[in-house]
Length: 364
Ligand SMILES: *[C@@H]1O[C@H](CO)[C@@H](O)[C@H](O)[C@H]1NC(C)=O
Ligand SMILES: *[C@@H]1O[C@H](CO)[C@@H](O)[C@H](O)[C@H]1NC(C)=O
Ligand SMILES: *[C@@H]1O[C@H](CO)[C@@H](O)[C@H](O)[C@H]1NC(C)=O
Image (tube, rainbow, N blue to C red; front, side):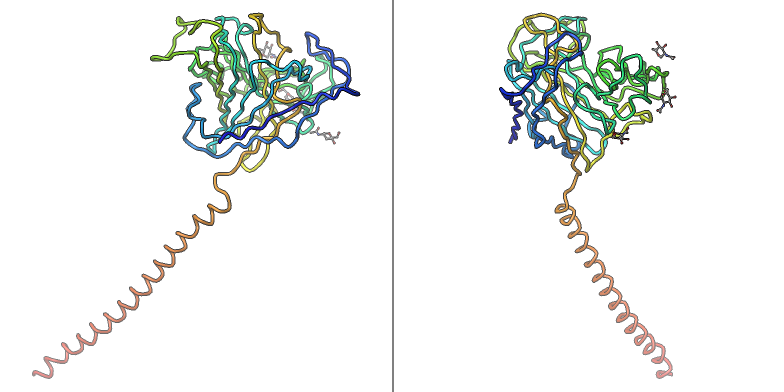
């Protein structure tokens, strides 16, 4: 059963200072957000069910959360993305976290032009003081952002732009970019990024105070649209893979290890039994017009809590222990019986032996 959690932004008609919509991330006016802190995404332990291919049939038994998509810079219910809500599902297999994003949208694809294709991003809190609003919320200007001045405001971002990505194929971390020690992806633009605010955003490993080649792109992912018909896998020459404007649904699937080798606060670290903070964003070329960076929709105007739940609840642990206890008791009983039987046989043998030993003497 799909548990539907709908997220509403109530735009109060009183006292709300409207935020001007501008082309950059510069905002004026007071930020207002009525988020529902009760919404939690449950990332359950479901090993061995998800294949990272953009097809989502393997997610059908996983509960998801549904979110209205409102403009990130102006979360006004009147400006909601008009083709439907975004569904977000998360599971883990004890080692990797898997994310599925699903959103309705007519097919739009222009090869090589990322902003004429839809695009998605996930953002996670790293630093304890990193706010959802303004991507970490470090107050420094771009020339003053450093890992010292913005310490505590780190956010982790995964951004997938599909203009060069073949549907159903895997993109993200790859050997060529990993060798260079950064979060880039030259093949499909599924990049691993960190930020302190919208203007201080870098590929993992790159930074204003120097590069650190211990970084890498820890993400992998694929995309698909329901109007695509797959025979034996697409190649680049098949682009645009289907005719444009067909009705349907976009699917995006991603995976990342729960823990990464990051030592410089550029990746969020996920822990089973603990909660993380997440947000998802969506760009769409509306009316065939290319989108620009800040004009994106978001699932919420604040962080959404995401719980990585352990594989077995207390109950199943008890259930697991009982057959073990029965087996232990049985083997103990069995060894006691065997011990008694061996003493009995030993006694009989030795009395028999005595009889046998004495018999010849008696017979002599
Ligand atoms: C977060 O902010 C609080 C209060 O300003 C401060 O005490 C704390 O050190 C900050 N944390 C980090 C990691 O900078
Ligand atoms: C860091 O790497 C980027 C991209 O490779 C390069 O442009 C920049 O000069 C490097 N910075 C330093 C300080 O080496
Ligand atoms: C900041 O980044 C530089 C370059 O990667 C690194 O040498 C330095 O240790 C970092 N400082 C902190 C406080 O993390």
